[in-house]
Length: 79
Image (cartoon, rainbow, N blue to C red; front, side, top):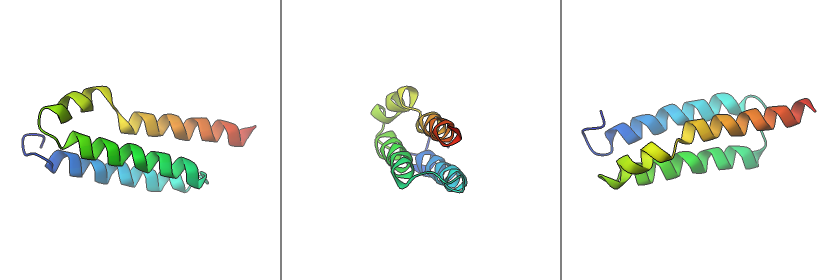
């Protein structure tokens, strides 16, 4: 999928948006959801650039960052 410019990034963004939707049901604040969306937008936009996007994708993992945001928010809710 990554061989066709942009296609892999769009599919990845769709999966990421699904994950944000699922996480949203946990009662996250609008700020956390906005940060998660920003991570996906940044990853999709820069990731679509040939060569530079591949290097960026290696270093910037939007879904991992988003899961960390969800975990941190849930830990704060428990307290």
